[in-house]
Every structure is written in structure tokens, then in C-alpha cells.
Length: 193
Length: 129
Image (cartoon, rainbow over all chains, first blue to last red; front, side, top):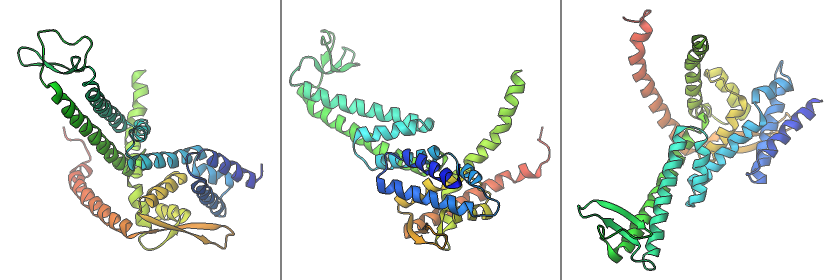
């Protein structure tokens, strides 16, 4: 294989693995890495094989670019799906990512369920609410089939709707803020990932 | 058997820790290379090799430069070179200079504190009983 073919093979693999980036970004990266290879090969005692070995596998470089892009996009997004996708990628990198992913998932599930129950309350008022037992201990909340027995009493009535809407919205907002903050912090650590 | 297997793993711990430390300092080091002017990727790598002990897989530096640029810490421009292909030069932005100043201050303060703490460890040849 000629030297040019070795370089082209390497750059082709790199280009293929840069899929999610725009064509412009991809070509700029390929051009830059190509320039690095050619400049390095002109150094005394260098060969294309040694230059490529020092660069590391093209797939690994591409993965670092992709991770950076995914986490950067997610840290600027408000979409729960994009944010959770970013945290899922982060979760593959270590304990901090796993923690952020599960806390984020928990926050969105709690917030989403509270909002959902607020909309269900007018349709199933007897099954939806916040129940306490005779001793003042909370028994259950949400939508229950069948509703708790006579030993429990529902304490909020239709106040459940604004309270569930407020707490659910706050939960979603706080989770979004927390994930975006965690992703921004993780960007500082990205060189370690 | 268990001991013979675990011994090398324990011996690897300081190496792995040192590798993490080096990688963690890479962003600051990459910014510091550009303090006196613009450089392209290979020049940054060679600068790091000459002025620090940050030996790295050369491909690692480019995604970091890309991210620092996306964060507004670096600016870049393509310059035609005599080598026959253009080179992408990086330079610090105002925000990059400010971040580097903050990082350098934190690093020096942190390392001075640790150095004081570690001084007796380095002075002692034997572990105290």
C-alpha cells in the first residue's frame, strides 16, 4: 500500500465515523487531520505508519468529536429527550454520568407523572389525589384503581390540580437545569473521558 | 495465585492516576501553548512535548481544540502554507485568556498547597511506623 493510500484509508475511516457532524464540520476535521499527518510525516525519521500510530485509531478520534458535539448540543437544549440522550452518553463514561442519568430520569418521570395526574383529576376525581390515613401519615398519591378504602381520606380535593401542575412543572424545570449544569461541568472534564 | 495477579494491578494504580492527572491538565496546557501567539495543531503538540511532560496520543488534542473553539475560548483560521496544504491555526480569544488566567491561578494555588502537604513525604525515605 502506498503512503497516500494509507493516509486516504485513515481519513476515510475518520470521515465515516464523524456521521452526526455537518458536512462542513466533517470536511474541516478531515482536512486538519490530513494536514497533521502530512506535516508529521515530513519530520526526521517519521514514517506514515508511525505517524498514524501516534495519532491513534481514527474511530477513537471521531468518537471524541461525536461525544463533544452530543454533550455540547445537549447542554444547550431544553428538550428532555436530547438532554437524556446526552446524559446517557455521559453515563457510559463513569459514575458521575450514571448518577446524572438516573437522577435526570427520576426527575422527568416524577414531573411528567404529576402533570399527567393533574389532567386526569377532573376525569377521575375519586381515583386521583393525595391520601392520608387516620394517624396523619401519607398513604398514597396519584391515580389509584381502586381508590383507597374508607380508612384513608383525600386531603386536597380539586386543589390537587394546581398543586400537581406547580410541583410537576418545578420538577421538570429543576431537572432540566440540573442536567444542563451537569453536562456543562462534564465538558470541562471531557478530556479525561 | 491471587497475590501474583493483584500485585501488577496495584502497581498500575499510580500510573493510571498520573495519566488521569495529565489528561485533566491538558485543556489548560493547550490554552497555555497559545499565550504568546497562534499555533497549528502539530505545533501545539510539539510545544507540549518540549515544555511539559504531557505526552499524549496526538489525536487527542484535536477534539479538545475543537471543543475549546466551540466554547469561544479559541479562534481559528486556515492559512496556506509552503508545505502545499493549508494549516489550521488557533489563537486565544479574550474569553480564553481570561479562563486561562483563572485556571493558572487555581492550579498554582492548588499545587503550592499540595506541595507543602507532600514535603514531609518526599523528605522521608522510610515510612514512619
